[in-house]
Amino acid sequence: MSGLSELGRFSEPAVLILISLAGGPRHGYAMQDDIEDLAGERPGPGTLYGAIRRLEERGYIEALPETERRKPYRLTDAGRAALTAELERMRAVASTGLRRLAAA
Image 1 (cartoon, rainbow, N blue to C red):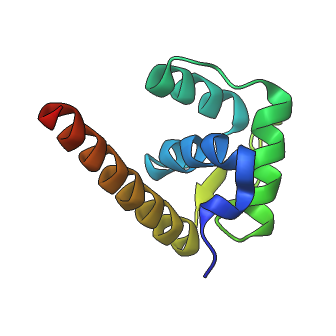
Image 2: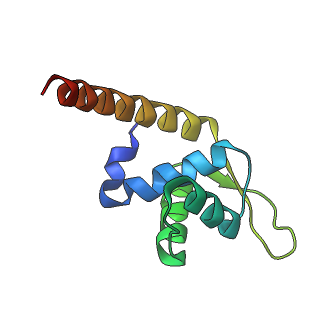
Image 3: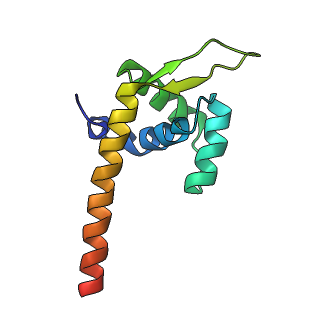
């Protein structure tokens, strides 16, 4: 399985979308709200829907049936595994950085 790092500069929006969907299915606008609460920045529609498309192509998320003209998405098992791996990688990097700062 390939990781989220293959998304290059799009990896941060992808991680935030996966984190949002880890809380349950959401449509795009609800993801924008959730990501803004989480990260303090609201992704624009182009960034959001571009990342959603790439995540869906890789099988990390899947669309659910539309309700009231809104298309919700949910995390797949592959998406959960990719997110877990990426968050573990981020934790290791942050831990090392904090250890080095404390020792400086």
